[in-house]
Image (tube, rainbow, N blue to C red; front, side):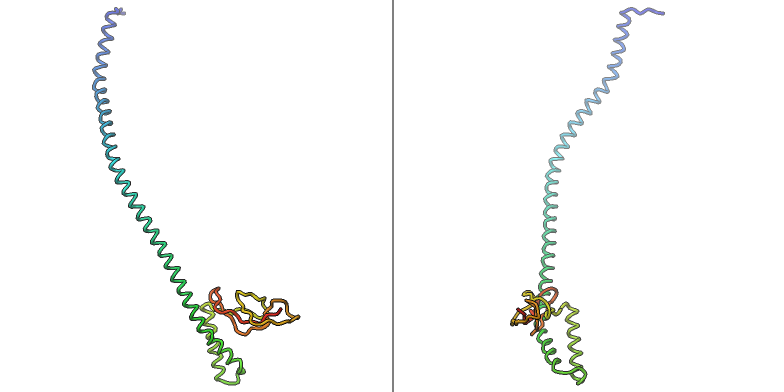
Length: 195
């Protein structure tokens, strides 16, 4: 075995270190260049982000404006639908109010004639039934009165009678039939109530 002197060992170590620094120098330069590029790219990204931020803010504002306008339009559409249905209900109710006296006159006229006695009266009875069927189909229903407890929401008491056989506040007679149109009272029943 060869013996190394300390001087030779030091020389060899210095040579190895020089070789390593020569090899590491390009890598260090590359890392320095990358770090510089990163700094430059970060600066440019910040500038782009600032520009993007303005654009993003503008886009957000426009999106918000569009969403608000869409919501306003939807509210407007709902409101007009409700108004249309209310106008239709009001118009239908006023027409029903005008038809009810005709129904009353049919009932008065048919009350004086016996069924099957006169062909003309039978024809009028058929027309009356058809009219009632048509009213029922569109939502017009008569209010039940006789034998029911008096309810001011549906009945209009025009007379009171003392009657021990009937309970208190019970309708004993109906003078004019009341009608409802889709859960709304068109005409109250005119009734006689027992005290």
